[in-house]
Length: 155
Length: 190
Image (tube, rainbow over all chains, first blue to last red; front, side, top):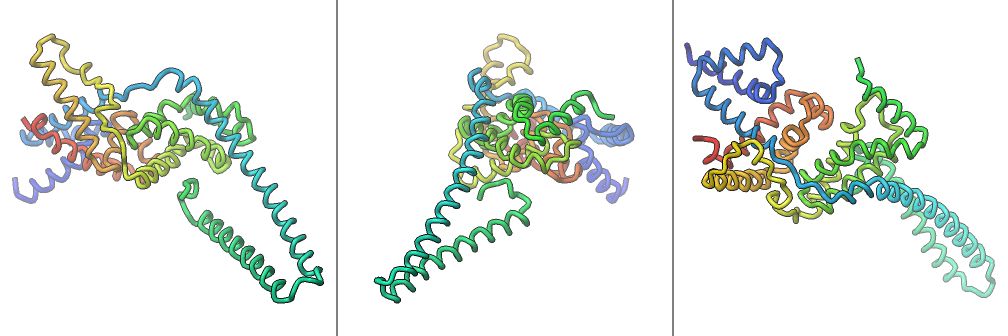
């Protein structure tokens, strides 16, 4: 057998090794793999090591939590879903009220004849800045949401 | 050809997409254990695993309309869960307990049940060594071993869950198992 053949066999062995350990080879691949293993004791030894490793890892299990965890699992998840919806509704209400309050405040400031012009400008500038910041943050969030494949994940 | 279970799951998903929370409850109850243990395998903390698996169900519910009803729910859900888990690991810089603390050490079951005390000692050593070795693997290596050997998922299911080709699953699995085998050299290279 030439060096080139040996290199090819080794590469092929490693390509098929995991499939053999996990019984995921097609019948043709299985025959090819058996042929490789039958003709190389080193390959056989390595196959046995990986089989033994899988036997051990497959038999290891996590401790199960108390039964109550499973009994309450859906109820806790349901509560979280419900609270999420409640927060969204609450936020919408708060945004509407805050926006209305700000609008009324600006209206009152502009209409107040006793307030100096410079103070009116200052207050309006602060409110305008806040609105621009809010729009900018919302736009950025929406843009990230549209282009991010992991948009379900909170950053 | 779809199995009865797949047809049933499809109809449940369609009902969930119409806003039926009780149907979603059936999905959650079907997959909660798998979800919890998968998260536990990734983050190594009971409270974290419980919270993250539930949070992933909440997010999955919010996005359920984006799910193709012909697709398996868990493989789609798993993508949400794994991202949450990896974010959690990144944010907490992993204060996880050693895996030997959360493992059930069922390796007893696969070794001859003889009462030979020297063999028992050897088994306990092996159990401890395997959990410790798993604990020191890189998160992505641990993930693929968890999916294949703990969750007993097929290559096809893993490929769908991780959104990668089957060839990539095989090569990642080989890398992970090789790393694990190297850490357990004294047990596996005799």
